[in-house]
Length: 164
Image (cartoon, rainbow, N blue to C red):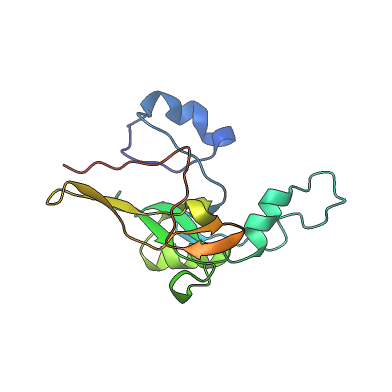
């Protein structure tokens, strides 16, 4: 197998073929564009709390508009990321999962993955002229129980992209 620079895959079906070629891996929930086709999750997420496979977090993340973070690969191998504000930050309502897939496809995604959402959705760049990091979106975080735009959340993991 020829190693690729980037791949979006499924652990159960792709791990054995890809694991020896990986330098770094990250995860997400919902493969939103697969082989150029926006995925439709209608009816696939269990909404009945009495169902034995019901997962509140999965249902909550799916059923409402939220801030979102997604990673994608174009058919030419170009990788890009998108952060969407929501919950009132800059009057943004956020995206449903399906809307995020449609948006990523519009931006040229051949493969795309919803990576995270909510207050963790924060885009930061390094400004070499000022030697400082700059937040590029308006993250929203709860402060004293109130959604507060512009307040970044402490997160335990990040995806760092270094461009030389």
